[in-house]
Image (cartoon, rainbow, N blue to C red):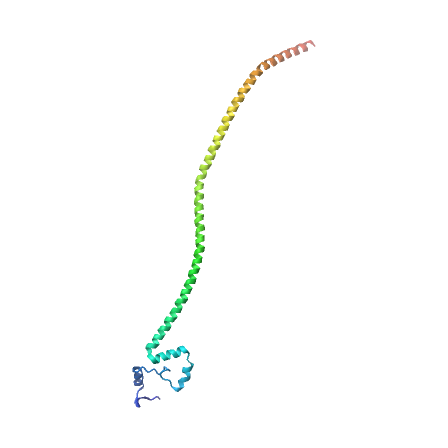
Length: 190
């Protein structure tokens, strides 16, 4: 059983704890109250734990809370820095991806322009074919007219030559008739 004393007079445990709170005495803080059996425990603490105990002894809960806030702020800062590095890395990756996509977008745009040009050319092709056919028709008409003129001129030449041959034909016909008559007369005489 534990007995409690305040200024050499007997007291209850709750009175002692109340007085400790009023005077900001931290029995668990090894920097403020260091019984002999806790010395080894204090020396085994790392520097962060000893700092926390020292600040609690100097300023009570206020310093300890500020230290915790400071640690939390430091952790947040580290996370933000890590997040910033990750964001920078991600941004760089997205820039590379965007550059690749821009190339693809340019190819798609060029393809679209080419397809539009093809569609326009498809509309023009019948007109070009019609123009080619019209040229061919004109060439053939011209050729027909030339051939017609050639035919006329050859017919005229033929007519002239036939007229020249007419007297010869008449002579030939006359000679044939005479030959036939001679042949008939010769066969009768035999």
